[in-house]
Image (cartoon, rainbow, N blue to C red; front, side):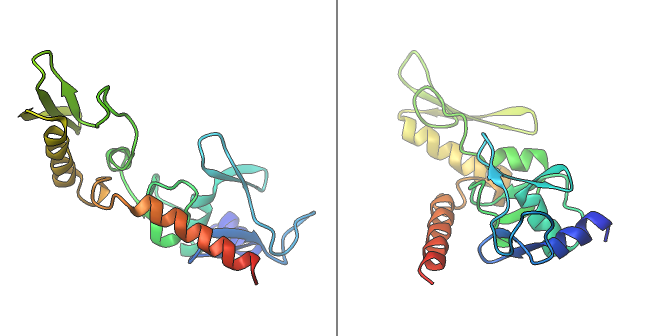
Length: 184
């Protein structure tokens, strides 16, 4: 284990159940034992200044929990950037991380669908740099269903359609935990 990880494990407490990082008794300066660590950046991630270097909280959570360097990319399974529970973090590749997003909707409101001039809908998905044609459909919902099925087939557990309610569940878990802590 390298020195920085050893210092993090000494000076920070990580609750794997809630994903919250707090300062420990050994923290230096004006940090008090139990104070939450970090602030939210403009992209919604929690960032932490440690030893004059900025880290993402999910990377610190990985290091403190496992005691080793994190993988190059870490995916938030439920797509909630502030949910740093260890059960919500997993190693991934760049395409897998990109697949597990809610971004980029088409003009008609559903990802992977394009409305054509004749009123029908084309379904398509991009995977490993190639666009896969998924057929023509009479409704946008039918085209989107074809896209969802292809996403699950191509991206497996990294598809956002495997667990569509996971982000909501993560936020509810965090609110519940915060509520319990303020009432104790």
